[in-house]
Amino acid sequence: MKVLVSACLLGENCKYNGSNNYNKKVIEFIRGHEVIAVCPEVSGGLNVPRKPAEIVDGMIMTEDGISVSREFREGASLALRQALDEKIDMAILQSRSPSCGVNQIYDGTFSGKLIEGQGVFAEMLKTAGIKVIDVEDI
Picture 1: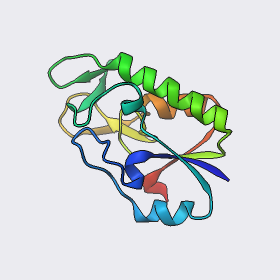
Picture 2: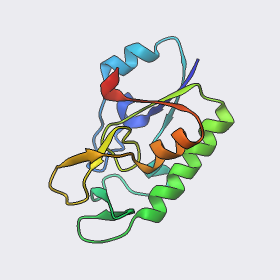
Picture 3: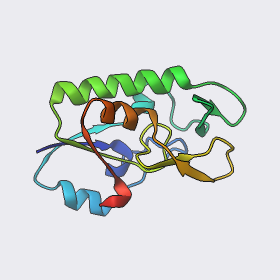
Picture 4: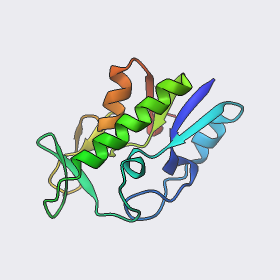
């Protein structure tokens, strides 16, 4: 089985703050499978570290009001193309991210409050008919 995984879950330091979300349960779950690691935000040209971003009225914005929608959407499109080219069977994505959030995202107020919703990459994968799992569901 081919599994696409948010690179931060595999220990890649690509989070906005320069760290990662290494997850041992994910590592165990994917053992024996072909793994494709992606970070749509980095693919879209964003630096590590970078300012945190949230989805605000459909736009992806930093807390200081700078739009990073183009970078997020371009990176998500590139990662989707890779997923389709690789013919992945499923994706495991990082919770709450404006790119990879599967079930919840931050509400756009930069207050830490969560709402139901999806990041742009998670939404693209689901629209393409790819099975998407939130890391917290493993």
